[in-house]
Each structure stands twice: as structure tokens, then as C-alpha cells.
Length: 236
Image (cartoon, rainbow, N blue to C red; front, side, top):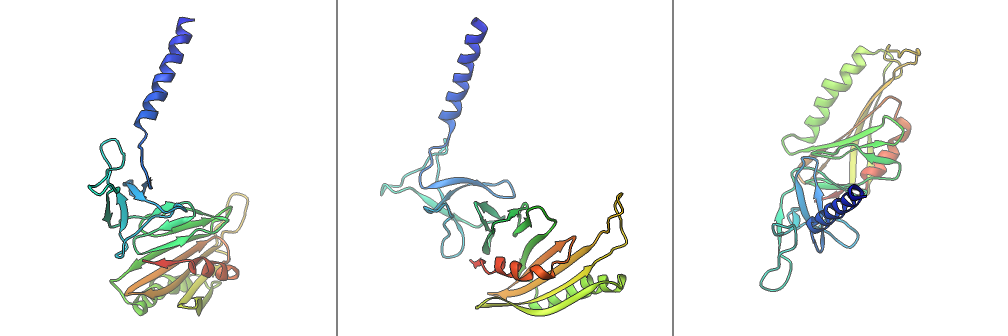
């Protein structure tokens, strides 16, 4: 009986400790990015983060216990810091230069510097990178030369596609892909391994954005769905 009572007391003490240590944060939430960095981010009523005019993340100033710090005016103090990695908040992926809504049926797949999501129950993966160290034409030409053309030369049965597409009324893009219906690889049951590689290129404010699409099936019938996902992009 004494041992049982001691266990109860220990559990109460542990619970009290965790309760006491829980940050008393107002007007924000504690978030962790893909690099493991923790932010006491200011959040809106809908849970979205707040950024300043330069796209920096607005964070709350906290004390050693993780609680808010008030300034002389009685308002909670804040700072603005540059995002280095993606933050996933609910169905939004917040990246340094843009944010995208994750649609129903898709899930985050460890977005790091940019978005990376996977369609549930499939091998369909979308990832986005961006750079201001190249031009749109160079990015398209190099990707074609060192990726898609290589696939086409190695697999005579590959099906390629190259066309302009519309993301939304303000954003057009170039789409290219290569699909290999039979790579020559089989699993133990004799099932055929197919391979798909596609790219959607677009440019905004001096940055070239590359959306990479990979799968083990032909994604040609789903490009409109992917373009719809990209249409939710909000540039910072």
C-alpha cells in the first residue's frame, strides 16, 4: 500500500512539474522548423504566422521560462528574424520566400529549405526549390540536358512532354517530363517498375522556382491537379 501511495505521489509531482514548466505564451505558438530551430512565433487567429514587410518571421520576446515579455508600453515585445528553413503549420508550408497550402489527400514529407509533399497512399512527390543564381532559360535548358534528355537516350520506350501551362491568371510556367513505363526492373512478384520525372518552371521577382515531380506511375493525367496546388502559392 505504501508503494502504491508513493507511486501516486510521484506521478502528481511529475505532472505538476510539467505543468509548471509549460510556457505561458500569449498571442503566439512555439514552432520548430525542419532544421530543429524553435520559434515563439506570433500567430493570427487562424493559426497562421505573421511576417513583416520584408518577409521575416515575427517572433515574441520570451523570458527564461518561455513566457511573454512586455515593453514599457505594456505590449508584448516582438522581433523579426529571417526564416532559414520551412515551417509546417497545419495545412500550410511556410518557406523563406513563399508559402503553399497542402491540399486534402496530401501530406508534408519533411519540407526543409522548400516545400516537399506526398500524395497519400502513393509515391507521388512534389518538391520546390528556388534560386536567384540562375535564369529561367538556363534552368530549363540544364534540366532538359542533364536529366530528361539522359532518360530519353537511355530508355527508347520513354514518353516525353514539353509545353507551357498556366498556374493562375498571374503566373505561367514551362512543364517538361519523361515517363518510363517499363524500366526493366522487376520486384520479387514480377511487377514492372515504372518511373516518372517532371518539372514545372516559373519565375517571380528575380527568383527561379523549380517544381520537381516524381512518381512510380504516369503523372500526365494529374498535371492540372499539381498546377492547382501551385496556384495556392503566396510569394513573400
